[in-house]
Amino acid sequence: KNPGKRPLTYNAILRGRDADDFSLPKGNTVTIAPKKQASMNVEFTIRFLRPAEALLLLTSHGIDAATLTFCLKSEVKHIEPAGVIKCKSPCYEL
Image 1: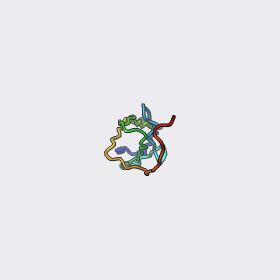
Image 2: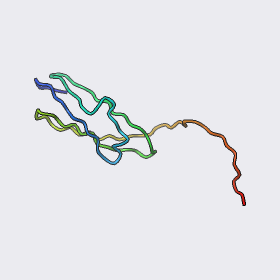
Image 3: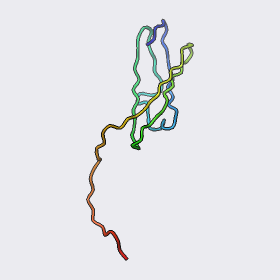
């Protein structure tokens, strides 16, 4: 939310161990109009079954606004196979 009388512009930065697994599909800049609120979508691409973690930092441009920090954590609840392949192969050959 922007309670002020001037627009706020934030630059988003993803940092941390799994930051490469998170992305910002609409770019890394968000502008919040005066007396309005804005949302920012964060996408996650799963590569491992373990939970992924990263930080989303929002730093202001020009106007002295607070830096915002969000902890991003993934949680895998359901997995479906992308496909099934049947093959035959000997288990052991001399």
